[in-house]
Length: 451
Image 1 (spheres, rainbow, N blue to C red):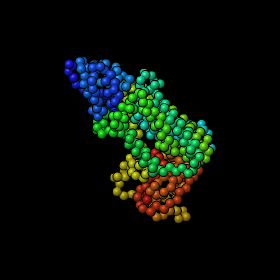
Image 2: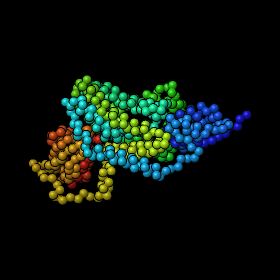
Image 3: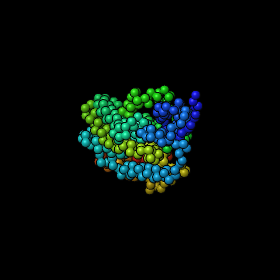
Image 4: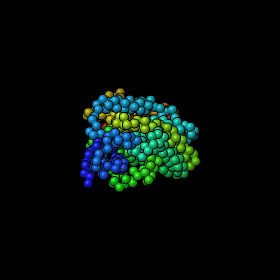
């Protein structure tokens, strides 16, 4: 008659329901262990065993591929390690913001007559900017789960498989649906409001994953998880459902547009040719795949046991930044105040001098602005209420989401821009106040103050 004993291990790296299943399944392979109960929200694994329990050395060796680290005590918070992670994340975020600020998208201006190489370069730039913020954030947030299914062999290729499948899914999807765009042409309409709300929802989900990677206990406690019988099916190596998910997720990103993606989709629509439209989207997706694969490779290289916690912190901080960045941008698109308008909460009234107001020519207030891929100049105007405004915008090298301007509070449609040309928008501002305008992804913005 053997006496059944209990013991609790603390586990670093357990962030989801499927993690629990993988740990439970593998621990039950030890003959001395009779039952296992893993709790993600606590980072604990309770075992019932007979005889001698497995040593920490045995467990850590067994779970080396899955990147789980077992301990007898909760892993203490390292202030020095955390600050190192924060500094690394700040440097990476700074590089991202610098690329956006320098207007790298102006290198590749595209239209219906552009070469496929131009669309490839356009995709490459997209992968370094808005696609990095949205799609790259998803890749980072899912990298932990993907490693659980693809870490059977200790090779970079095996671990890179889900990222390759994700990008192959994108490429196939973009080529197929690109052909569809060419067939239906201009009949397909993408609502800007729907797109903004969709990006906000996805960004909130990204923030949730980011908080999990940072190990925030409150998030772990309220995390949603599938029933265990579903998680067990996905975690079972004989069922390939989990292994197909990266391909499916990559394919679905066609319907999750960033500014660059919608630009390419718009040009594909105008081509009115299924073959040409398919090639346009294929070239664009191939361009985005290189930066996104780089993001995936970074997730793999930093997944060694001694670097797992540090990578999770860095990725978590970056994911939270990308989520805030996306939501902040979409607030501008929807006409709401965002982080750029913090001073507005302290302002009680708009002050102005007569010289700040535009000249009236033929009964219209004339304001002029230059639009570039990295910003608008000037980006702040004051106009009189109830007097028609003629807004002249000179395109000096826009691309991606910068090639159109919207202001839902002032006029319902968008102002389409073309490189080297002057676009004109006329409207009558009626109610005094400050109204935002932006590119249709909210990454570049300005304001018109109605006196």
